[in-house]
Image (cartoon, rainbow, N blue to C red; front, side):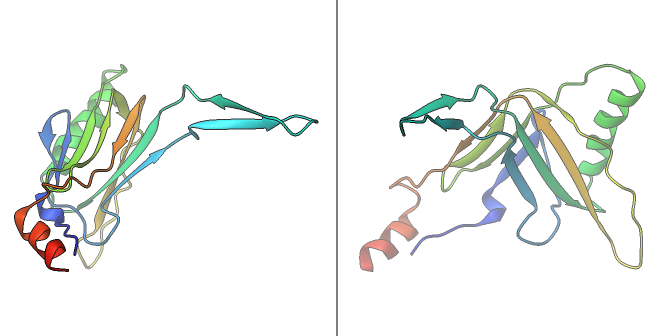
Length: 154
């Protein structure tokens, strides 16, 4: 048996913890913007592989309308608008139990989220574009005694 608990995950923008995520299974999504490699096959059937230097990433974080993190992220975006300058942003997300993580070098907030209000509290989508993003998916043997015991017992 394997175990996962979102409550143990940590997400930060510029080192500031982000809280009050939206419900659902897509509260955080990280996507590489380019393939790692491309290829060409010549007339004789031999393939040449070209590695891509583009490791840029887009990360979408969905927060509840009532999340205090919206105010922090809005200040970053407003500074970018009104200072008319690049405002660097980093995004990190980690599951310390399973050792999965997403990290980045500097990037920017793509745009201020849409402002939508209605009968129920809504979802605020924050989109970041980062110069270099890394994915590390782990499954360490020391991921926790309860899981290890359950795996050993079958």
